[in-house]
Length: 253
Image (cartoon, rainbow, N blue to C red; front, side):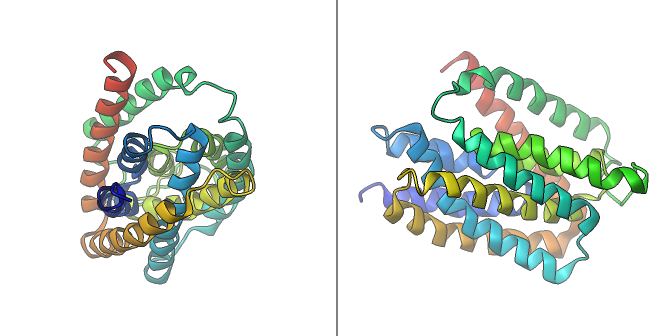
């Protein structure tokens, strides 16, 4: 109980960050690990998903009301992400996260470099794939990032936004909206594993969920007001923070 105020604040910040640029897990997961050192990793991740799904659902709903969602991309990506997120969650108990941490560090660094040196990317919609490749490509992206989000999580939203910008030519605002829908599917699927397995601390998760929703409301409002340029810069800042965090955890912690 004494840790709840700090966790609520972390959820508030995470909801804002995640609604705009993804990467809210880089705030919430370390906070939960620090506050709940005696809990199993699966319980920490399950509680994190309970907190995250409220803010993600709110952001997805608000984006959907204000902008046109490219369903030919969002639909297949969400379906495959749902299926593969459940598979990823099921591997948490036996596959060491240290196996993927160095790879995630390299990928995150590449995302930051590419986004900074290519300022024109994501400023306006630019079709990259032919129409007949949109659905298969979206299905593949959803599968890969869905599995990652179910298994590990932090940075998944940022990877999703980057993929939708670079591979499908969406601007950052529309990419963030699609990422919220896909992220909602991955959170729901992961909870189908964590809840029956008993890996959720409900008091902590629901308290954090309320504050996560508030943060998501503020983040979505600002993103819709200021557009793709605002989302891009928040995305760069979040990606730099993620890279620094993964670097510290990999080499110094």
